[in-house]
Amino acid sequence: MKPITHFLFLFTVFSLAENVAGGAETLTVDADTAARMAIEASTLTLAAADRVEASQSSIKAADALRLPVLSVNAVVAYQNAVPEFAAPIDGPGQPPTVIFPNIQNTYSADVSMSQPIYTGGAISAKREAAQLDESATTWSQKLTAIELSNHARLLYWSAVAAAAGVDVAEAQLKRTQRLLDDSRALREAGMVVNADVFAAEARFSSAEVDIIRTRNEEEQSLAHLRSLLGIGAGNELNLKDSRTEQVPSSPPALAELERTALENRPELRITDARIDGLGAQARAVNANRRPMVAASGQWLVARPNQRFLPLEDVVNDSWRVGIGASWQFFDGSRTKEQVATVHAEQRALQHDRGELERQILLEVATARLELESALEAIVAADASADAAAAWEGASGERYSAGLAMLSELLDAQADLTATEVARVRARAAAWMAEAALLRAVGR
Image 1 (cartoon, rainbow, N blue to C red):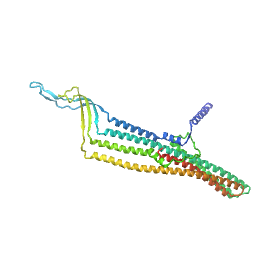
Image 2: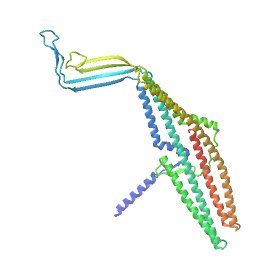
Image 3: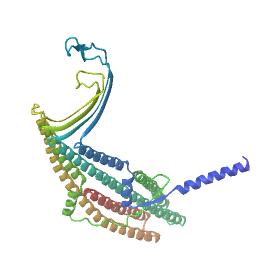
Image 4: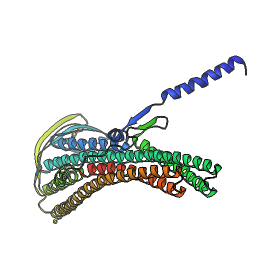
């Protein structure tokens, strides 16, 4: 490779590396930020917004039923030849007058208009049904946002717990490394036997396995969180709560939470809108029993124009205006049965709403109990971890002084690791319980 070519190659490689490094971004998120990013990144949010837009267009379409309908028609046709019909209508001795000529090329164009005057309430009922469908779709959009934010919070705290688990495993590895070094030094001094060193080596190997396992759990948790938040692999993700030191606040009273849930849960609002929508649908169907009145008009330009006799191969225009009424006063009870079907569906949905309300209240109560128990577990986990740390420290001192066997220190270290893991999981469980309670009350 020539020197100048070699230089250009290296320059290109370093430039690309610098651009890749410069394009990377470090994102620091907390639970609230993760919830917001999940809503913004998900295609489910876009789908919900499109459904809302579609329901709004349905309202406009229902409003348009009140407006007149204008149509323009044009026809050009070529038809087969027929014998002409003529009659001597001008008297004896006069040539016959062609009454029905042989016209093979025909042309016509017309502008028609119809305006509903009375529809028996069908138009207003359809408009109300469209508005209620829009309301249900809007609440469905809110439900999508709540589900995404709740999922993001759970994944965030799972990732925090996994990261804290790695910290615990690394601390345990350092303790076992020190213990292994000490036991080897004591064996050289003739103060311990090989079995003690082998036990320390086994515990060190177990700690290495825990490091591998916890790091894999952390990577998987971060991968799930990245996927939900729409964060590319080239961007670094930092968790603001790298250690779960903070704890949630105590939950409000159950009555307050139940009242909030009944007011905010989108599922209830969606069901209410669908129940009312079925009522509007029943009124629209029942309108078929009533007479319909509409105004109409037409302006026609045709060659020939059928309203001008005798027919001539010339262009003539004509117009008409009028009011028409129709009343289907008997249809074999089809409309009646259709209305009864809709009403039965409406009653069934009302019963479903009662069951849904019961489930929501139960969900609120259990979520509150879960948060309370998780907060109590934190206190117990902290006390247990502090006691285990004191035991591990005392055992280490006794072992160094030759007053304790290695097995006692190993047990103390194992208990300390278990209590530290329990402390991390207790805090993560509390935050997850708070997220579940927020979801239960519709936030």
